Image (tube, rainbow, N blue to C red; front, side, top):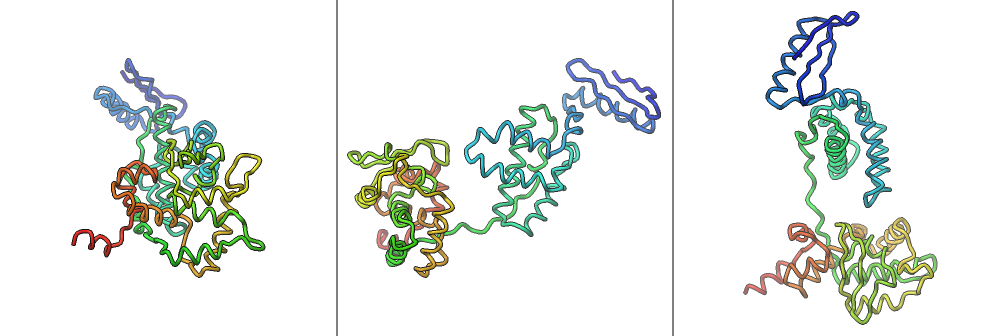
Length: 327
């Protein structure tokens, strides 16, 4: 049932229907109010009505702010996510209310950001947008479509396939030798990364209590995919760990991300391997381990990949060696 009445200088339309909250909107012209009321009644009859009142009163920035307050602290990587989301809150798109945040505006934001940052970073930001909007729809009663779903994601460059050769590894380890002004943890970090295929964060989070020399394993309580994992240790990995000093706080590596990154960059510069990145050590490890563990399920159990399609991004077999196997 709909009623139209003059409210001040505007025509106010009210639509009542059992099972729905009252829909109210004001118009300058009565005919527009009647047209809107008929459309709302039809949508309610079809069960497709979406109450947009709350979305009209809420800006995207307000959603981000609430997400930062209620959701982000519960997530892994909360600190980095908070920094990125606070930066997005300073963008003009944060001032849009949720009823006017359309796919075309998201696409415009995407195109502007592509002139400033890498496509992969834009994809990450759009994923933030989608997660926040979906959470608001499910948990906070913001009845609005998710416009991100209609926006084309930027094309990302092909993933890196840089694998360290044994000669390059020798040069890198020489450049990591603990001399004056060099951190003692850079060289053992490189060796462990190559021997175990562990991620940077996993290596830096290692604790002595989780290393079992008798079983030749290292237990990772929490990994990137949210699950624990037990990593087998090679003889070289064990010897490297045993040579490290025991820290009072129980950490195996008493060095943070930033210090490791700085020392690694200095080492690759000394070694003349300027195209190398820390994450390439994981590529190298997966490729070398694949020769010892041809069963991809066993290999994924070591590397921690949840599906084989992701593992294929890190596994870069030598075509010449594959040719020998099928000869």
